[in-house]
Length: 358
Ligand SMILES: Cc1cc2nc3c(=O)[nH]c(=O)nc-3n(C[C@H](O)[C@H](O)[C@H](O)COP(=O)(O)OP(=O)(O)OC[C@H]3O[C@@H](n4cnc5c(N)ncnc54)[C@H](O)[C@@H]3O)c2cc1C
Image (cartoon, rainbow, N blue to C red; front, side, top):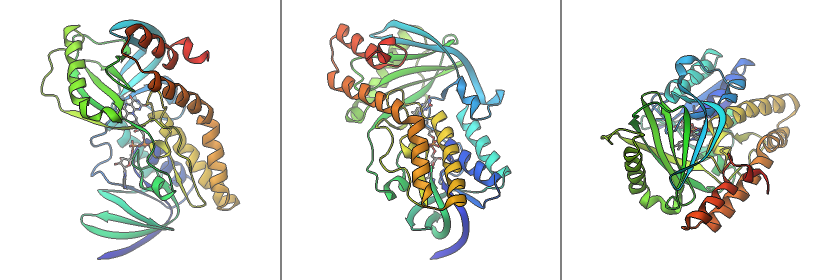
């Protein structure tokens, strides 16, 4: 049976960094906001390597207990050799805890959070939520799709599923802590890269590849971990569980908003096409989404698509267009020849000057 529920000024689907940020801002202005999150508890099973640039503190609060470790920058390895060491301070987060805090802040601002509730259908202002086997309808003047890389709302806006990488990760015990976030490139990892992000005594060790290589990902990650054991970076591989997921790599979705609906964060393709970094962008796009909704309330719904699209394009349009070009030519020219591969990566990875010189 379908229950008909309440009306909200804004319904935010997804309590990741994008959704909680947007919901908090909207609730702070006195709007009635509902956050619908399919997980039983916010932050449960977050699939993430948890590295953020220090600049994130400009946009979101970070408490010391949210930070597993500070790192000085990024070390890049190509074909097993150190290729660059760049100072770019950042943090490896406890995302599970931080995501919860962001959602708590939204609730403290007045948002209504429902967990264990999945948005399954949207028709105009009506959102159908599936909750414990029962359907419930709620209505919203504005609907914000902050529902990650397989976004229902993005589809509703007419967007096709964009390009993605597929990632797999395990948390392994380090031989000793690392002061830099480590990035690895290898010709066997088509379209992606490996990482070791130190969290004190352990590290997130992961690998992302183009989705065409999904079938080999587990085996490739095991090989990568074995190499790290041999190099005495991590201790013996134990039964650590793997996590993983999709990382958008196709850039911004074509339609970011209409007159009452928008997408933010991964749902909007706000993940950097080359690095896969999307945490800070989720926060920033969540803020821009809230601002656009408030403008639409003040100036009329027809402003929503225009102002939000302009804001997101100004923030990411050029940066992502360049990254998309670099990624496309890298994937096209991918080679097993080590020397050529090193040149290719230098032209297409953000820590090398060659990336910016084309
Ligand atoms: C393995 C991996 C490693 C990564 N490492 C990094 C990294 O080191 N640094 C970085 O910056 N980025 C990283 N990313 C990307 C980063 O995790 C995302 O960009 C970021 O989480 C996006 O935030 P979001 O709020 O848009 O979406 P999400 O964090 O995905 O949140 C979306 C929320 O919506 C909920 N949801 C989805 N559909 C529905 C529905 N129908 N109804 C209700 N709720 C729904 C989900 O349960 C989820 O809680 C990584 C991604 C992966 C997969």
